[in-house]
Amino acid sequence: MTVFYKYGFAFLWIAYCVYYWIKSLDVKASKQTESMPSRLIRAIAILSAIALLAIQNMPLGPLDRRITSYTKTCFWTGFVLAAAGLLFSVWARLHLGSNWSRAVTIKQDHELITSGPYAFVRHPIYTGLLTGFIGSALALNKWRGIVAVILVFIVLWYKLRLEEKWMRSRFGGAYESYSKQVAVLFPYLL
Image (cartoon, rainbow, N blue to C red; front, side, top):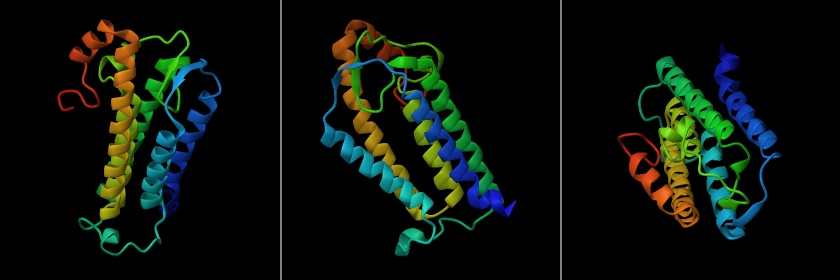
């Protein structure tokens, strides 16, 4: 069981990243893409959040303190939450198909997807990813996990605001109507 505690999250996140990399090979061509500096800033922030969660022996002073006493329940709750979030993100990615992209883009023949996980939230990939980070931070149970989640939230919030603008521009009233019916990230919350 000690091996699982040490490598379970690494396996979960690596499997998730490999899946996304494989699926990124089959997407539509882009008509419009966000700027490289915007993508670079987001990548640096996400990599920083990953480092905060993954590098256990990184001395960070007060950020390395535990939030509460550590328990197996905390670990397992975090693991289940992370796995559920990443699976929700995978479901959304499957449903989005070739319309997906790493950067904010408008694809050639871009389609407005409103079914599957998109019937619950407008940005289910971000919902799943953020939930994965929240679960990872909960299992870690250190203040640096909170900082990692805040970083990821800020980055995803910026990205989704840009996506919202572009989707409204591309799909007009259809997207406006959809956005009035479906929450951005979490039903009944946000």
